[in-house]
Length: 243
Image (cartoon, one colour):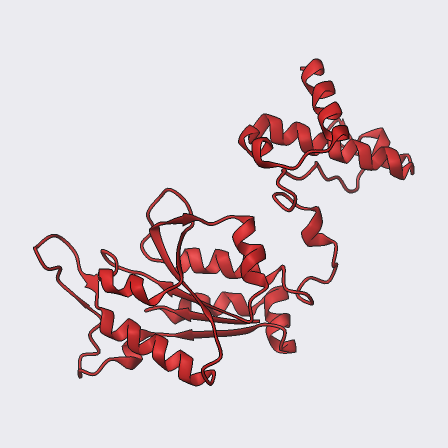
């Protein structure tokens, strides 16, 4: 899968080429490209922003450098399609569903904002707008980093264990169950007996119940959209009776 990141600060993405993503890049599973609009400007000052019409504080990213950059990326990949995403606080909140959808693409282009935002005409150059959450960052780079990691880890061949992505929080709409490792007892707290029992059916039931319990306690809103089985509903009733 190819990731294209349009940013004024490409050096911020050097860290993506480490760990599992670095190995995926080396293996050719992931292709990570960064480009700055300054390279596609036409003036000697490499200007990418200007003051807003109508007055106001700050500077606004000009449409020309962004459009030129996107055209250049299209040419570089021989006109092969991509999915363009504008990173802005006004976009839809990014979720695991976005990551799954993006991971099925051959190419994803992320456009990072800076300063006071984008010239409105840039919005017509992208397919959708995405936000990392209900807060404002200095720019879109932190959001792009999160989206690349969340998406790339779902691409086949990136994670060493193919089951890892399926057993974590939000993978099925719920929060993940508690995890334990050695030692069996730490500062007076013991690993639950069921996890050391060797009874795989009991362990699976415990994990599912604890996943439901944690979701009910911390993110009850997720339960409204989750696809719950009859067994899940039974477990939830048990949890509520124990509270």
